[in-house]
Image (cartoon, rainbow, N blue to C red):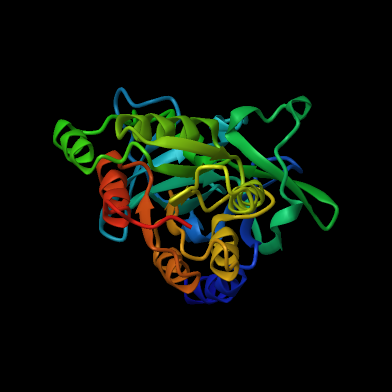
Length: 309
């Protein structure tokens, strides 16, 4: 565990410079898959598991992880492979998403790698990965499919996108209707959630699907005197081409944009992420998806009369 954490800590210096650190693994054939190392707590041999009656088909069972019972998800099944539930050589990848801990069964962990954010691209439909892979790249010539674990978890847990009645009343009192917020996320599901949230707050949204598009759009808005300005950016962290850390750093380094408020909104919620949020000088971090918490952060950062860039 110490050696693993040392390797992960060495990778943190890459964040904020549009470099992505990933743990590679296989599911039983030659295809490589990847997951952001900031989401991984530990990798171990598959422990003894208890079956859970009436559980979702993707749930292989539960196990004891350092004194806490966590659900174990059969990631092989989610990706279209044969179940690893009874495979003795399988490994458990313990992850933290949005402040919750769960395990994923994988066949064979490989190694830690890093690659340029620009090398990540949305997978072509013809590759057949479906919605559970949100990016592809190549490492040493081999195709790597980056798993959209949020998509997998969303199929297990219903997510509310509605603001509570008290928060809606608070938002109306602040009279935020003239203000514009930029929503930056490569996930269509996440973008729709955010647009719905800000619609409930009577706020207009400008949409971008990755950090590069967001930066270009913000620079264009700043250079157009007649266009209504953006006051705040709500950005995912994991995105192709330019991630949220690099986008925040670029905003802070651009004179015309540096006064923008930036909220990083991600399922990455471990200690490494908290350090990087401070490193790139984001104004706030909110774990996905907590409508009232995000709305309160927006209200805190956008008081009435706030000057726009």
